[in-house]
Image (cartoon, rainbow, N blue to C red; front, side, top):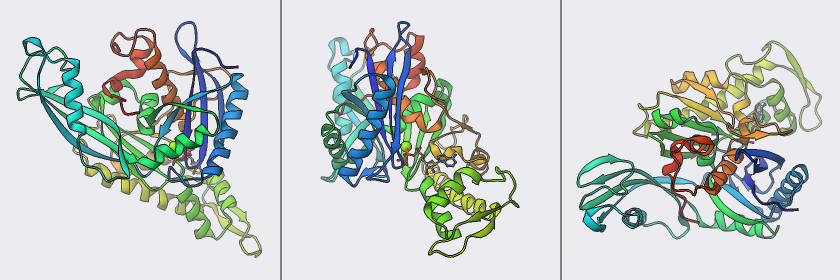
Length: 411
Ligand SMILES: Nc1ncnc2c1ncn2[C@@H]1O[C@H](COP(=O)(O)OP(=O)(O)OP(=O)(O)O)[C@@H](O)[C@H]1O
Ligand SMILES: [Mg+2]
């Protein structure tokens, strides 16, 4: 049966489809009541490439989540991610129209609309407009212009775009399962909400979600996302390199990675040998674990090198004292935190979803960050006080932290 006050977050990743079901308890704290997790099929680097297979994977995750939660789910908050996401800076300007020259809500809407007026190819659409700062009559650095006096309002924004068909394909897939999309939320935005502390969002940090086929980079500074990028590499590339490097079947490569994989000596004993099945029916052969881990390390280094290059192109690279926060399934590789510190030259920590409670559901998983952020996002918009007042502390003030400035007005 469906119940009031229930929310479901759906993360359709390249490796796994996950659905988290949560409800507000009497103290208005979100409590996770169910989780469904199934291998993802029909998704390539975050984009839907096989409708039927995707529907099958999502259906299995939904059934599992509904069963464990004991409720029927009719609508979902969906994370949107993948290598099609791109971000650019834009700018808008409008005369201030309010009485006595005071900035009104309409002025803010208007200036953001002006900033959205960018030319895009036919196959792309705006997914999110993230205000960076406002300027009134040449005085910049303003976060909340509402009610301030002046003649001219300007805004700098970060615009995130994605493929039009990506969202439409997801809507169609979910529609065929009788699921309504309550909202689409950028995956990295949801993950950041779930794992970053308010200090990290304010003082400067990078969220790095290393998933199955993609690595998301989201740079936070002064309570807003300042840079967003997606790299076309993830855990499956590590497995593929093991498959070709050791000439073993993909299934064996995946289990070798999970059981013995690690970087920077983050493994038991590199001299230990394991017996591996060969491809083409050849005899199994013995290999030192260290050979496998050097392959793993080379691929992870490649990922971090690309991250470093991406960060260099971001003007906030020198303003990230809180360092890197690692999420995604591939962040479970032993030694990866140390390697991140070495290559990116900043402190690193593992990120786990916070401020979510769950009975019988294991929430301390780095790969649940996106799902957890989706339900936190949904509840923050549903709390009784209404979405305009997020400064009063309490659960939602803490959970929402600095991300309150992000408008989600495009769906
Ligand atoms: N213990 C582990 N050690 C190493 N890698 C792991 C471990 N557990 C999971 N992984 C890897 O994590 C990856 C999946 O991560 P995740 O579930 O975050 O991906 P996803 O969200 O489905 O994909 P994406 O975000 O790229 O679309 C897989 O490649 C898997 O092999
Ligand atoms: Mg993911």
